[in-house]
Amino acid sequence: MQKKYIVRLTEAERATLVEVIKQLKGSSQKVRRAQVLLKADADGPAWTDAQIADAFDCRTKTVENIRERFVTAGFDDTLHGKPRPAARPKLLDGAQEAQVIALRLGTPPAGFANWTLRLLADKVVELAIVESISHETVRQTLKKTA
Image (cartoon, rainbow, N blue to C red; front, side, top):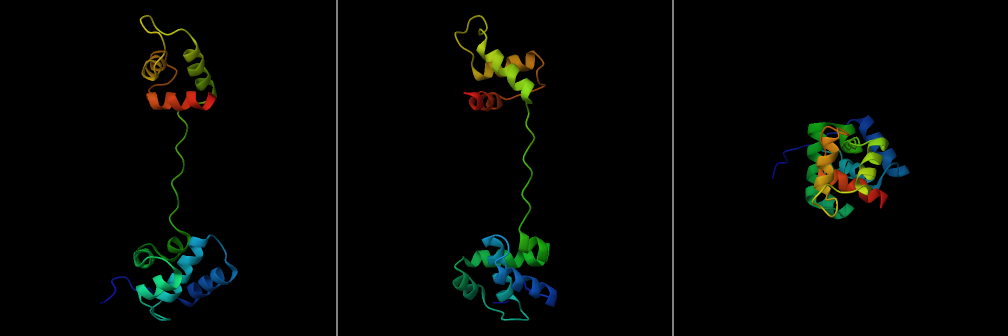
C-alpha cells in the first residue's frame, strides 16, 4: 500500500537525529521519535511501519502519527513534540483567598447552619471580591488551606 506521508530527510536533519540517538539527548520520547524518523526515511532504510514498530517497541499508529506530523508540521515540531499549553492563571490572588477563608470562618447567613460552597461563591460575588467565581474554585481554595 502506498504511504500517504513520505519522510524525506536532509543531511542536516539526519545528522541531528543521529546525534540525538547517540548521545541520548533529551527525553526518551524524543529519542524514539528520532529513531523512527531515521528508519522511516524514504532515502535511507525506508522500513515499513510494522518493522519500525517492532524494532522500537511501539504501535504502528505511533509510527504513522510521527510520519504525518513530520510532513504536516515540520522537522522541529516532530522531533521536540507539541508545546504544552501554559497553565491558566489563578482566579484568586492571596488577599482574595484570605477573604474567602475569613468569610467561611464567619457565621453563615440566616436560615443556614453551615456555609455551602454555592452560598460562599454567591457571597464572594455579592461582596465584589471577584466578578464571578464557581463553587469549584471556592472548594479548591478551601481545600488547600485545610
